[in-house]
Image (cartoon, rainbow, N blue to C red; front, side, top):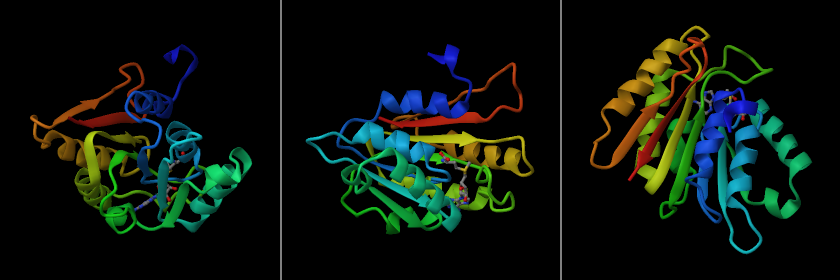
Length: 195
Ligand code: SAM
């Protein structure tokens, strides 16, 4: 599969496909330009069952960019399955209905490509958001994180994510990190599978 693919996000999408089912509810914690949101919608939406994507970003510009991509790529019915919310991902529980079963929470950390580089995910809020994701995720679900280490603060954020992952109880969670050993500065995909 990876022969034609180069990006850590391609790898994350590949893993999502093995976990997410049609009709699921999923959450994009950093929707940015909308590529992950679109990939998630394609996994959950079908004609008969309704799947939902909650797509969050702290930047209005990012939500606008996601909105444009969705308009270009989806019909109206499909677009209605996506809820775009301008909020910090640490507050995701304010967005998702209390009784929702969330199969996937995905983080693609760092800054908005093509946007302001100073607006960036931060270890403290990322950690709080991971705690919130742990609370809303259903059994059999996945927390997927792509961490960028090439920018200032990236290594500290990786450390925060690893600290979070390392303390997950082994009875209920399988936590993996993928390192591209021939590209030390490549983004790092981390997957937390809930049993
Ligand atoms: N998933 C996106 C895509 O497919 O295009 C790329 C995401 S981009 C690497 C990271 C995004 O995280 C930026 O759009 C940024 O505004 C957003 N962000 C930064 N801090 C955030 C926070 N506390 N809560 C939610 N989003 C945040």
